[in-house]
Length: 117
Image 1 (cartoon, rainbow, N blue to C red):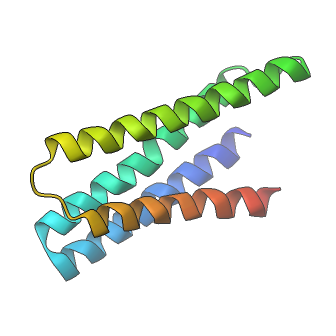
Image 2: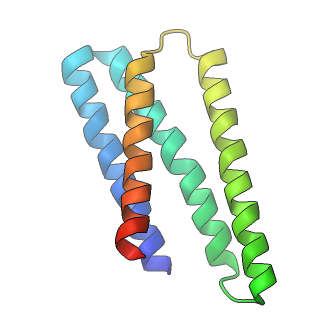
């Protein structure tokens, strides 16, 4: 399980880096910063969720399900907080770059779930 989670996070980081580079070439520094921020919003909650699962990978079915719920809830809250902070504190923001990169990191996550299922 650790290697699968590490691969997912690694591919998310790679996709974020590529998207940030493309945003820089196409839209400049503000677009690149926004893309990097969108990638971070996609990667960090996924990593936190993965760490929560790795911390205690065994237990009763009830405990495993509770950790899944806690992980998903934590991921959702962290994502919302990161988006709120981005819109509140980042003055120059390319919304298109931010959301496009965030969506790309989610696509990696969902594709990996489908491939590993």
